[in-house]
Length: 126
Length: 290
Image (cartoon, rainbow over all chains, first blue to last red; front, side, top):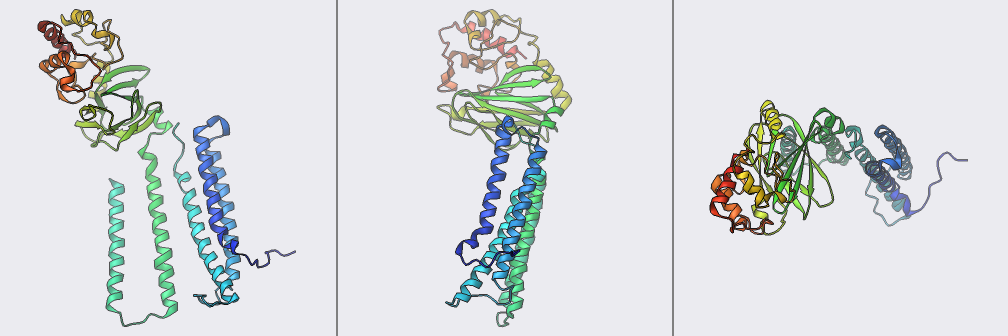
């Protein structure tokens, strides 16, 4: 069994980072909203919510880092310089890898910024 | 203020740096930068630097945020909450202080240097509460309670206004905010919790006989109406008719005789059928309620 998946030739890997970012954002936003609006439903302390968000954040960051590594591999670990704009299968593969790597970087920062408020906001106003 | 200064200096520094880079680029237009060097410039100047800067600014803003709003711990620490309810076209004010409920209207007094929590409500249409000198505005929405926290920095008298169109006299719906030293405020609040010392004046019987008490409350009398502003200490307020005219005996008498002349669309009917001397007596009594 391989530790890392085989190179998958599909367009959809491009969106791994942004999709994780979107999922992380939704989980943070929805859990904080439910926690504040319906205290009885979740019935936990704010610090538990913080821990939950921290856990989801770490998972999201690890997943994004993994997708970034796969993209880096697809890009040939930077052995070729962009722009990969030749109409060849090889260039398309490199281009997708490079674009995925950049999107993973963006998503990484975005996930951090989404989770940042919960460090400073210590409760919700009810 | 601190946030503004820090952000302004940061913005100025970044602007200077960008303009400097542009100038350098324009001056050295003939020199070609090698591709690896250009890539490095793009990576550090175009990605890493903005990300780190934005992260730092965001962190700083988040760090300031908890001080800008009341928190449960803060609510335990202070023993004052002010509930303001928007009505067409006046403000009902209730101070909640150590289990006491102290009613007032159209004038808000605040102690300097204490962060005060406001509960903002509305009984009819959407109003908006704004005292520009003290902070931002907040809507008052029927069926909802919005929270706002304000801290006065210096003593003075400030004007507030309704900033959401609420009907005919929307433009005549203002508010007086008086900020006081904490000791003076405490003394004032204690005096407001009691009936006015002049409550036994001669206009009182007329006030009650003509039915004013079915809409207005005056502490220490049988007048317990809640449809109109609380008049228990009307004489001590700076302005009349929600910040529209000076609080004088003449203006009170004029308002009783014909409220619509000062405040079109006001719910209070005209009492011009009363004898002028009765109106004057009521006005004198109300002005005396300090």
